[in-house]
Length: 163
Image (cartoon, rainbow, N blue to C red; front, side, top):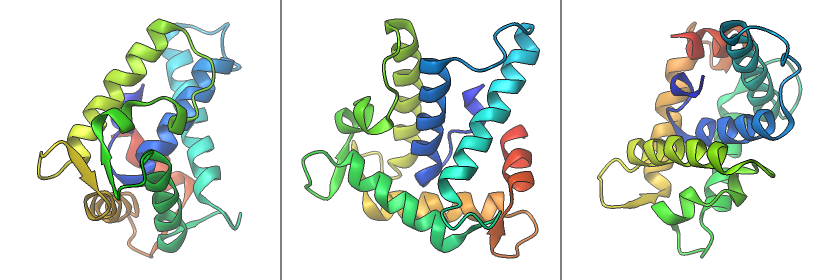
């Protein structure tokens, strides 16, 4: 489910939040088959991410909204407030807002977060700077905004995560 989501800036944290909500609370699709359940969970995660970023609730995510949430996420990850995020800080479940999840689910989430961090740490020095985080966010927004109108719709986000 998560592999398609994990690329860039605030989307990373938001997917972590959405995944955490789904893992902790369970999706409303528990009675469905594996593939159907996975698709339903992915759709629910995308919807939750979209709601989090669409701060003015106009049905679109602007680049300003996208950037603002990304900045908030970076601050949340920087636990010691030194202006950079270490891998240990990034792997801490608290800023991912996952709630109470089982050890197996936490291990899976940390594996995903570790790969995310490796992607975000562009210079591979073991520290994610604000500029690395912002650059990944710009690239992600540009990739997701498929019609290049400066806004991301729910349909564009769904399409981007399905690729």
